[in-house]
Structure formats: C-alpha cells, structure tokens
Image (tube, protein in one colour):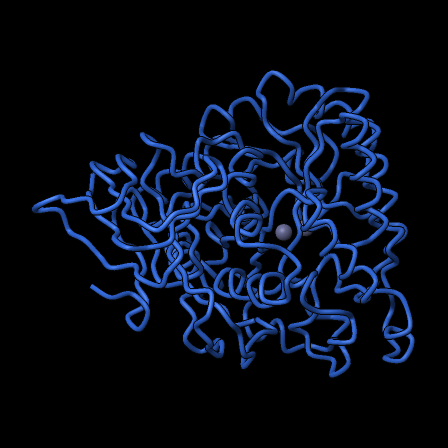
Length: 431
Ligand SMILES: [Zn+2]
Ligand SMILES: [Zn+2]
C-alpha cells in the first residue's frame, strides 16, 4: 500500500464538486486529504504544477487478447497501454479464446491481473455459451468470480427471447447487460457505413438502421424487465435519440461513445486504410455532431475506447476482408481534449465526468472519485501540451491505430493506482 503527496495541481473531481488548486495526499493506497500546503514528511511527492489532477480514469470497454491471442495483447501489455492513456481501471470483454463464458476463465483473468497488471482489471462475462446466442452462460458463477457485467460484444444477441431472459436473470446480480447493437441481417456483411462514401469506394455498407433497430428492441426489453441495459459504442444520431427518450421515460439505460466515433467520419476510409475499419463503422458528420451534442447534454454517459488490438498481418488484407477494430487506449484523453474541450463543446468538469464517475457507476464500483477514503487512483494530465502520436512507441502489442502521426493537444502526464505511480511522462511530470 503506497503513499504519495501530489502537490500544486488543479484538482478536479466532478463526483464531489471539487475544482481547486492544492495538494492531494494518498496514504496507504487511499485518498486521505485534499488541502493547500499539506506537509507529509517521509512521503514521496511529486509536483503537479500546471497539471490537472483527476480521479483515475475508468474504461469499461477494452479487448485484451489473453487468453488465446497473446501475440496481439496480454493482460500485462494491455494494462500498460491503459496506464499510458491515463486509465487506472479497465474492463475486458469476453471474446478471448476460450471465451470468458464460465468462472474458470473469469478467475484466470482476475488472478493474472493481480500478478501482472499495473491497473485494475474487471472482467466482463459472456451472455451466452461461446457467445453463440443460444444458451445462457454461467452468469451467477462468473459474477461470483469477479465479472462486473455481461456482454457478447463483437456479436449482438440476435434472439430477442434470449435477451429478455438474460435481462431478467441479471436483475438480482445488479450488473449491466452490455449490448453490441447490430441486427446482423440488416448489416449483411457490410464493412463500412452505408452511404455516399461506401458507394464511391465500392464497398458494401452497414446501414445505421442495423444499430438503431437493435437499440430500440433492447430499450423496450429493458423497460419490460427493469434491467440495466448498457449500449456499447453508440454511433448514430438515431440510437442517440432513442437513448434520450429512454432516459426521459426512466428506463435504466446507459451508453458509451468511443473517441474514434466522435473524431472521424466515414470519409477517413477513402484510402482503404483498414485501420479505419471497426464495428460499428465510422459514420457521417451528422452522426458525429449528434454524438458531441449527446456528450455535452448528458444523453451519453461515458467515453470508452473499444480498444481492439489486431495483428499486423491480419489488418494487411483487403478492406472487406480485414478484421474490425482499432487500438485506442493511449489516444482517448488527447482526442477528447482536442475535439471536445479545445473546441469549446464541453468543459473540463464534464470531460472528466465522462472518463471517471459515470463509467464507474455503470459497473457499480466505488471508483472514479477522489472522495476521502476511496481508492487512491489518480490521472494527471496537461490540457495544453502539444504532441504527435507515434504508434511505434505504443505500450500495446498491436499497432492498428488510425491516429498515428496525428497532432493532438493535451496529454497524460502520470497515472497513479492505489498511491503507486504506474505511468510517468518524464517531460510533463516533475519530481
Ligand atoms: Zn462491439
Ligand atoms: Zn468491443
């Protein structure tokens, strides 16, 4: 259990309405004091002058490829990439090999994380056996082993009756049912957004309707069952309108948006770069504008990366044959600062809320806060440092990222988990 004194930073904690310049003391791994001029002799300290001191960031949507595809990512390398991106907690999706659809795999991830990860790692269990959408997985036992939510992410739950059953079953466990909203009949093996760009490129499109109809079904089922539905990587104006209406009606519905969906449009696919291929696909400018409105007005609860590492050889295929997904842990905060904060669309308090307390609440963990007595997880960042993302410097084992070479404004300076510095940007973080 580590202790650390972080001095002279601008401490912003939306969960307790704190925004002040001062010192933050972590003792024995927990937040113990926020004040000016704290003296703590013998405690290691660091100077956070000109930096923002925020609660540790929580990413509820990450793909670590362990077990099964350790060539693409491991629990250890994924957690290091997370720390470099300012995340102190991440949730890992179950589509590993084998799939995390039983407590043995869940237990393996929890134990491996304890041994090797530098951040906290919370597994998400599968909804159905092998995520095949036919039979419910051992949800209760996975929750007992440490799963904080359930999802067949990568695949939608196509069977509405199974979705209803899993929602009913999830209630006593108080866990979110996380859905990758996509009607596979409507998306029909498309590889990018259906519209002008897909026509120009001669690629098969995925209509926005594929997402919207599935989201509508899930929200109706959540209303019927009272379950907590969480819509992953929301990408369309249509689904956002449905979310807004669902919240107005009091349905227990939350959602996340990825940095790539609010930073890029389907025009980015014009060079057939497979690092612009992900599911759901990049959408249109109208959708991007809708997402930014939703991030500002509270319709969207949190930002999550959907970090999806892939082997270089697999991404070096033709656009329609390459796998979906990009890496995103290390660029998430900088993209958000560049596209949302520096453009005046949202303020810092809201931005931090989207990365911290709101994400933590979805998985029912007392994280994402600097309240006294809580875990001493802290993210330090500069809003103004300008830098260029170089994917060759990544801590991830994979390099499938469309943001390589992009100039960004705002950068992670340091990441602290339970009072221990797990990532340090030497240029920004003074001793
Ligand atoms: Zn997905
Ligand atoms: Zn995903």
